[in-house]
Amino acid sequence: MEKIVSAHQPNFLPYLGFFDKMDKSDVFVIRDEVQFAERDYHHRNRIRINGPRNNEPQCKWIRVPVTKEQKHVRQITVRNEVKDKNVPWNIFMLRQIKSNYETAPFFSKYYPELEAILRVKTEKLIDLNMEIIKFLKRCFDINTEIVYASQLDYDKTNDASEDLVRIAKALDADVYLSGVGGRAYLNHDSFSAADVGLQFQSFTHPVYPQRYAGFVPNLAAIDALFNVGNIFRKERTDRHYLEDATVASRVEVA
Image (cartoon, rainbow, N blue to C red):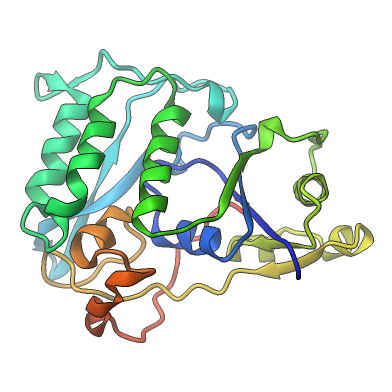
């Protein structure tokens, strides 16, 4: 039986495609040894909000204030002294999440644990992100093993394909499962030479009833969780809401 490995950076409140890739893997590698990117999803993501603009459904960014330094993701610290509207940033973020989702069908079931995580003042961004990722992994009933790239016995290079090959070999994997973005830059020959299969994620973003009219894809996964529950497993009893529609996914870093 093939052993499938995939990898991703430890994003803040990741979207459904992140967990779809995790669910399809035997081992999911957290790329904590890559450099922090301010314009990526390392410390921010989007939630739905009310009020159409130009007849389009709306969303907004929520952000964790961090030290924006040229460091590895695992080294980035949270600026807990930052306030929004005269309250700590995390309390303000919780208020935004609650005000936009508190009447959603599954909000009361899942919000308390998320609230408990966000109320803790963590020093490192990765610790906060991983607590949320593990929380969502449990909510979606995903049993995939998680490992950190920084703890693997492999020497990082400046070649993305070679790094992923070395990660796969370090875990004795037969196949590396890449996100769709990997099609643009991964070298098939590097994987073939190492006898590691290369596959690409096939992810169709489900369309489900959001809290407000219209639909915005690729939001933080809590949007699906609060609205339809465990979209991957048991609460598929609610999937009569879902449409078999392909929604263009944003490109994620493999």
